[in-house]
Length: 67
Image (cartoon, rainbow, N blue to C red; front, side):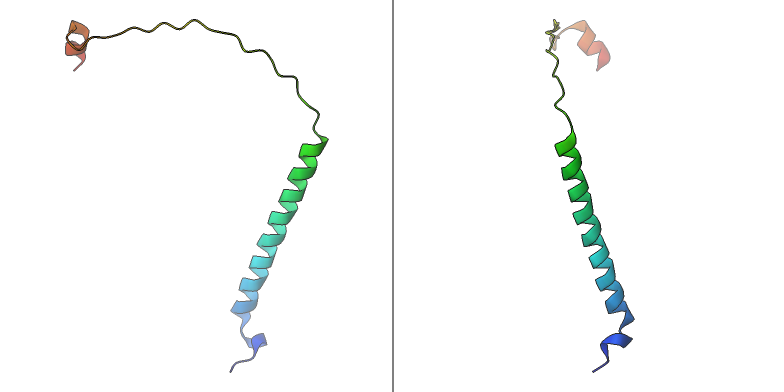
């Protein structure tokens, strides 16, 4: 059975996994802290817009010209 110290690739995989986990936890903490310090933003009222719908019949000349 080989020694654990001679298996450098196992240590490399463990170190990479640990660093990714540490970065994920740090990013989550920073994101959580930034969301708590943010002040509530005033929401603007939505404006209603008029919308026009043009129905095109399949027998019309415009449809037959396009297809």
